[in-house]
Image (cartoon, rainbow over all chains, first blue to last red; front, side):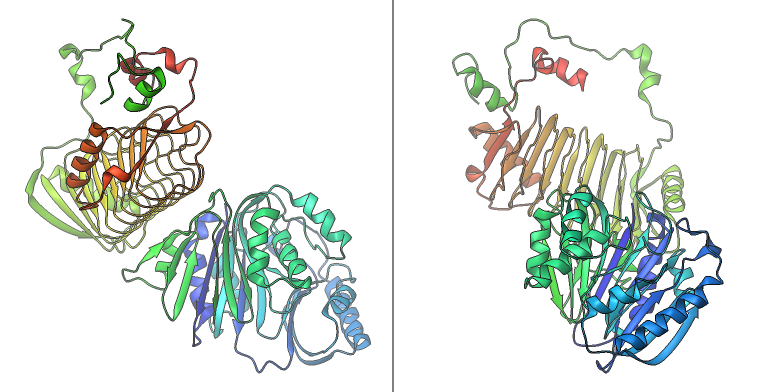
Length: 313
Length: 284
């Protein structure tokens, strides 16, 4: 089934890594094959943060690949050389795990060309690219992933996350949510549900030059919205169009550097509980996710079918 | 009520919330047999005293511990139990087959008060999906909003939400009454088979989709009718019943029931409509 959670602090910052970890851990019964975080931190807005992987989490049983970890060093070297060719300057480099890296980069050219070049290296995928967004996803439940990547100290304005029960694609990082809204910086998506016109939409979007990294139907939402925005639609307009363009049952969240949105399909077949106040919006597949950060009695509600909402920081 | 002998067949059905009401002598009555009395008792029912009251804090309990504690308290004769700090936990207050005053001081998660028969429950908070699913009898009052599948497959009793509810309210309903003070989502009354739903606010798309019996009353706007749902004449007896029901439910004071829209099944089902009313009950 999968569980999703999201929150946005309006007008201030908070320890969003810790808060989202609590929300997702409360939903772990909805799936703990993998967990993903899209955290929007406070940055100076000058450089890009690129989170990327050079392989899968083989040690934890990734179903997508059985590769030798020794290839990761070689892939990293190729990525470094491509960055140099692209004119991107690496300001800071962190190798958090053998397969997972975080680069702070100075770069001011086209992100699509950049991504295509970097991802032409076998096994390499950019998990996120943005000036405040960082996507961290891996196998295991929320607590395991949080501890593995030290996320509980991350301060920011908003965040979305996903606890995954794999149903239609593999147990691996490439199929885990959140998905980056390639090629737009700072756009991420999480989804609970199934999309039934995935292949039809994928073929159309690939013909338009959009890229898919997995066979997970949820990735379609990120690509679909990115393509709408590329053609001039606002985030909210793209989300409203998705209610018609995407077939199936879904509730999804999408975040940009300064906003957080939710959309629910016209059948209202997937759950969502929402809490909204002047300074905080918190939402999740179940109320217990919200209760992990707001244990007191609060006013919550289920958005109706076909509803789209967007909040600003 | 419409004159069943003189009115047109379609309006006869609609006035009763049924398709056909013409008796043809096929009705089978079922009587209680004292020799089978032992089959009519539930295991785990107790003599309780409503004046014997206690509170339990379930903050650090899982749903099994909390439900077991409620059962133990009923066994000790407590007839009024207050649950503190439910904090959105799932499956609280399920399977209670006893008379009981149960009060939740807070919100419930999924399947709250499911499969119960007899208690009077007040929830001073919100409920998640499938509240009171399969309820046989009793009364559940929710002070705030409710999630989807509210009152799914209930067979009896009164289920009252003073706020708004999600999609598929009263899905597969087989009896009883559901009353909503606010708005209701899409597919309300989906595959409804018996009973009544009252919505004082607006309702979403596909109202009463695939319903084959029962009646829905809507006070506000209707997004759209579902397949098989049609509008029927709101009779004086309907209005009297609505006023009485809303008064008992302590909801919608001064609400003008004469403006409500009555919705019933419009499709004739070949097998189902061949049955007499009491046979339909048996069939369901």
